[in-house]
Amino acid sequence: MTGAPLVGVLALQGDVREHQHALEACGALTRRVRTIAELDGIDALVIPGGESTTMSKLAVRWGLLEPLRVLVRSGLPAYGSCAGMIMLADRIEGGRADQETIGGLDVTVRRNAFGRQVDSFEGDLSMPVLGDAPVHAVFIRAPWVETVGEEVEVLGTVATGPAAGRIVAVRQGDLIATSFHPELTGDTRVHEYFVEMVRGKA
Image 1 (tube, rainbow, N blue to C red):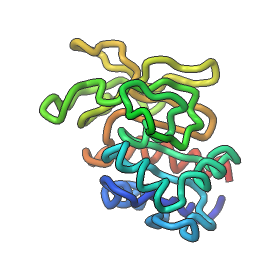
Image 2 (image 1 turned 90 degrees about the vertical axis):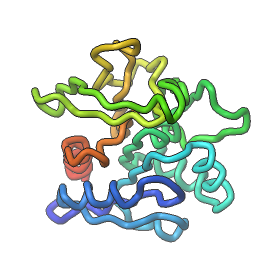
Image 3 (image 1 turned 45 degrees about the vertical axis):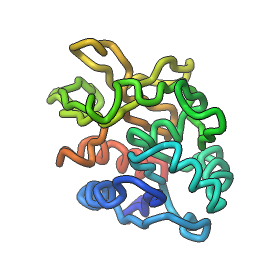
Image 4 (image 1 turned 45 degrees about the horizontal axis):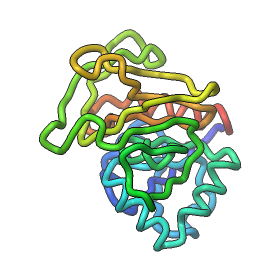
């Protein structure tokens, strides 16, 4: 791809603007996606953090869930942060019985794994795909990945503390997900990694 990729940011709920700013800093164009028509022509999709059950219900109500599933199954690159990780997961622990996801990532994700809002925290992670410098990660009512399928690559784990070893970043093909919120830190390396992946696919 010679031009800037057009990345849709699912704008049902959550930190949409912050993702747009990070993507634009990496040379991408962005579009807020609230309708089926706004999916037309995008090169990739970002699913932001927020509240996963609310996001799921709104996607169903506005008729977006099945079109999103079709696009992801057909190979549209997607990145999900926090609630976005839950939305891309094939399986959820600790979710509502009627909670639906877009799916695509062969993982089991535990919702609110790190605890409630008061248990939100920040910490440094090692993510070798992003270079030697640690990634400063912000976790807000974050999930973690309980199990991964054979085709899933683990990109990052918690290094220290009670959650040491827990998986918080994964990739499967053209799908990426993180438990944390890189859009809140000013470190654009996760978004750069994603945008470069989108350019490579195109």
